[in-house]
Length: 596
Image (tube, rainbow, N blue to C red; front, side):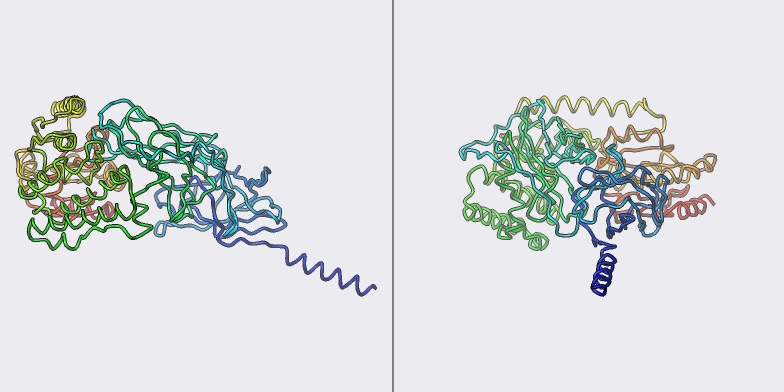
């Protein structure tokens, strides 16, 4: 009996030793406030819960975890009790080459049977928070979707009339399975007809109840893209694509426990205006997932030598679209959605067969075959891709809402590019009034720029009558006898701004030298953003047209990227070019050589 007791005690001890650690390798994360942290493993012991983590973060930025960071599981909190490789509450930096760093956090011990937990700094907007950390393969409980978000819609609904209006639209986002501290961000994008070269974009954050409302102007019925990245370990993000008309609203339902993949989306329900398009039909997703739709023949576009070949490619695609519509049994509303796919052809034609695309022969084909400019009277779906098509209608008086819209977009693009442009033929009174108002605002801004009201070192050269190849010389003529340093930049370019900051001390050293710093940007930077940014950047600033920028990028650098730099000597000879910010030393050496 004594031997049995000893044996039993020994077995219990061994079993106890075997239970000292429980390990989750590469655990899954349901959602997180940032996407640059990952969990290598979680180890459960009697004395601590140990999180082995990694960060991948740009080397110029610092980061830290608060001393008050905690784990929460089953309604209980477990405090941080230590760390390796970082100090809780103190700033840390990643490796300057790899941008990575491995570190370990220790917390009070969780129960061994824990199946899921959260890790939070707090519920503030800037905290590093991770939710639903769990072993690989452990499924999250999905929410039950309220019936009103899954209601059927009648098949005989009609597409909205094409009416231009400044009545705002409202998007309501409501989250299920939401916890305070998630601070989930959503990006909302839509085409902005007041600035056709860019999309209007806005990032909104859900409140502690998992709700956010967003109101904006879209001016005409169009599709709006809502993006949610979801889990940082998810391979795919989620997109909602509601269709809205001015004055309307839609509610979008998102389940925080649905981790997006190639077939599942975090967006699970919709109600409101035209919401059926999200639930029933997503053209691009259908084409990607089923792989049986029409395809763009890019190779044939590249090899086309005549307009008749270009037209034949287009006719072949149109036939394939019609066959696809028939095969899928699309109703009229769904067929209208296929217009976007058809329109994409023209963007590709302008890119790969530009000389044929811009001919009068091809324009005549469009006017003959599709007088509505391929935009249905009630479905004008405009994106930057289609601006190439719009310029073909610039000089025509073809009637219809589609051609009107094309001429409007082309005209506004000309104004945004700094060109003098007569008002195009726009028959629709609401669209015509919008053009007049926008044109007046732009001209007022440009006039302020010309008068240097906001900065003495800012210039607006009206170069619409100057050939692109003469732009550099036109600017150099203003600085005869000086060394000129050109900085091609954009307001949205982080490396451009970094270059400005690192060059500031050098420019101060050279302020009495025979050199001028000239900054060039173009229409990729919204005019208003440019005006706000330049007063803090010493030097002379110029805002170029899109054509001028394209020519200089191609002929001087062979690259459209920014930043780019060039140096000209006192005789106007080019001495140096550089693409990308490579650090201060290279540029300083080149400037000193030019000055000497």
